[in-house]
Amino acid sequence: MRGSPSSSGRSCAARSNPARSKTPNSARSTTPPPLAQTTTEAVGEAVNAWRVGREELHVLFLVDRSSSTGAETVSYNGDDLTAGDAAVQTAIATVQAMESNSRAGLWEYGVGAGDDAPYREVADLAELSDDHRETLETDLYDVSEDSYDGGSPLYDTLVAARDYMNGHATDGALSVIVVLTNSSRDEVSEGSAADTAAALTEQGGSTVVYTVGFGETDPENLTTLAAATGGSYVQAPSEGDVLDAIGG
Image (cartoon, rainbow, N blue to C red; front, side):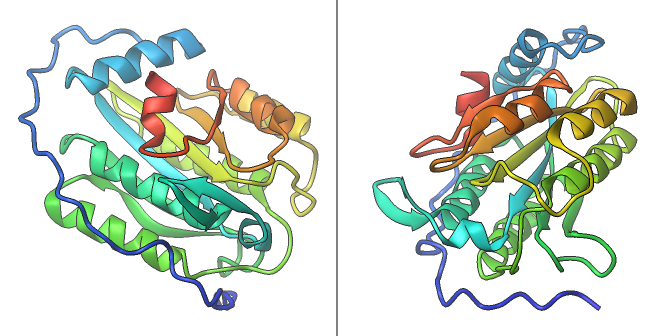
């Protein structure tokens, strides 16, 4: 039985749905840049290639809904929001910025989020048709109402999420996990950040992890996790989408 999230009594900043620019996709290159070596430089080049329509992008958002996300206030788009709400708004902005040939999915994590796991698979990875984009945005707003008591079980969630994304990886597409959190400490999962990084390295696969930290997050553990996959830690943007920070 799914752990019952306690209502935060908050609403994620107003559910405005600004009009999305629908620019026709550019023709894809017949020889996309190779991704065999998932270095930070290679990933950055691939993200930039996607930004001009030459590469498909597959993104799984991991949104932290542990109690710590409601305990810190940050600034986003000029408003004071909880770190959790800012993370949701950042994910929504990213979904709105992605091309329609991209794919996106959503998981939330926190103690009791899933029936038998510390995470819940909210939306499967799927092509961003108008319907899926709208559904994903609605799911993100719904997730903003969830809050799970206890610590932030990132390590176990990340290993499971990367296994999922590796299983859905396709040639010619950049497979990315974007972690959105204000907590770098995980006292719920077994093992340490270094242990988890070793597990991610042993896991292999082409999926790259970017950890996006909000507020006063200590980047050390988040950097360790991302670097094990060829990704990196990114300080959360104060406005807009996270891909600007990653591919900029």
